[in-house]
Length: 286
Figure 1 (tube, rainbow, N blue to C red):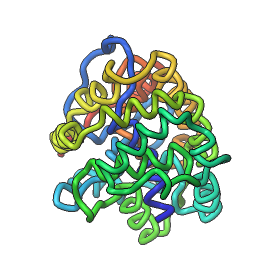
Figure 2 (cartoon, rainbow, N blue to C red):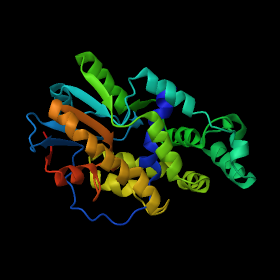
Figure 3 (tube, one colour):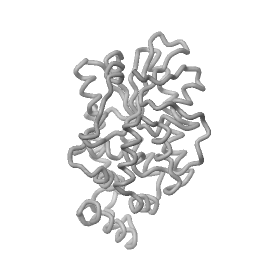
């Protein structure tokens, strides 16, 4: 359960989206897998965009991705879900600092209760001890409309363990929780939940299966939901932080980076930032 909650918190960004301006960087080719080379690298590394979770019937992993994963010496995710310390920290943070009944206003509680009953069949009293982010993550899981979710990060970790290669993370659970909590007000979180729908998740999954990273970015940055401040905190700053970390890792060994697809495209997307840093980034189709 704790792994599921942490991964579903990551998928909030893809399911609910965040507000931004129109994309100003060049459109990207349709590919979830990108090769990173040049700029002094002795071996290529790879960047892969995930959807974090998906119904088993929609899950796929292309031969090109399997081949890339088999060729590298290290797997790096947003968070290292194979680290027991990270999982323990996540479990602690899933519980709110104070009950929702004290944190939220009566109006906010009423809205959240209605959303929970509609999407999960649960009442707000049943999740009173959870953080609002945890509640959001549980609702996001329901939007996929199935009970047999598969998690890309867990699949990658399993393959890495089989090959006995190192696994790392670009940020910690504590850092990610802090980022998400600072990015949204309580009203914004509840508003996002009110706007969420299984139809939107279905469109997102279709874009993912088409490997359309620009469309994934458009969904992730839909203007219906929150502020430019949130977009800066959730995407831009994190992408910039990651691109500071990635070069040192790639210098040492060939790395397979797997991050949410919404982080790939855009002016401050990981692909554009790596290109600005001098790397050659090209899509892998076969």
